[in-house]
Length: 371
Image (tube, rainbow, N blue to C red; front, top):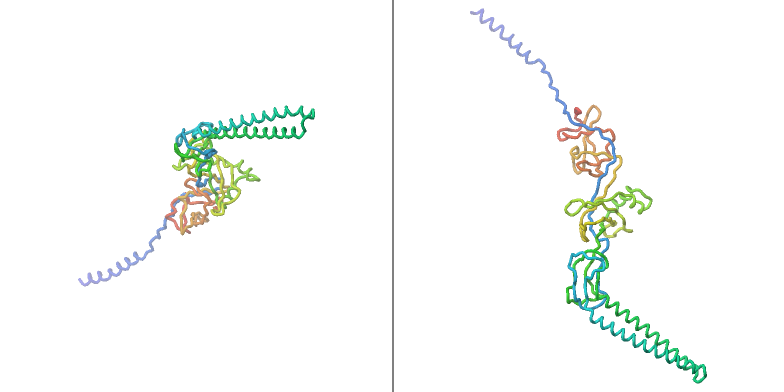
């Protein structure tokens, strides 16, 4: 029994040592698996973007319809918003006083013509008497002067008739151009005058419309730089057409062209006004319409970077690129514009490897696998 106890005490330390040796063996270090991310190579290109500017519309011709004579408005023959043709009667001013003036002027003309006839007869009677030295030449000269005065009176009377007829014609207020009637400031029975502050109405010819918008000084410099031509007129002739974004954000179906640039900047706003003309055959656009003019901007040697491939940090925008040994580094970019869901960027070098997705789970300096 003692022998058995001895042997059991002898082998226990040996088993313990073997156990410790097994525990102290080095375990294999597990390697972290590299992320596999999609990468594209950046190539420069020419990209067209656009920028929008608030705008307002005016008819190609906006005419104030005003009375030329004073009187009572007898009839209003149109309604607000109606389309009228050139020469169509719009308003009728009571013409009875003007008819009377015409009659008086014609009567005065007939009296002047009668007086002229008398002077001619007198001159014919005196001429042979002077020739026969029955009377002095002075009387003949006096008769001649009376004839000239009578002729002047006839001319003046005839002018008065023409003026009276013209005033009578002015009682008929007609449309100077074809277009749409605006608000009516006077109603039937109102007294009207050529000196009224407000016109009777505003008539808009809108077969074409002028769209006015403004560019800041910086945008205007870019506008001139991007369009070819030695003079502003050359640039306007060569530049591409522009689009009009309507108030409901739809695009007007017909393109327009910029045909005027104001000669100076507004001192208050620091902006210059431009005008684009759009055809309007269906009369969709009206004076007073608002919208936005969309200008195309051409960018040379730029890259399109998906917005999803960028990250914003402290109001700055970065992209993640892959460098040597597939290490990730970030680069600050400057946005030159937008095209759809892409940024237009000019400061990413040609051939750079851009990570397009998964950037939320990577850190600068990390190695990746390129997909």
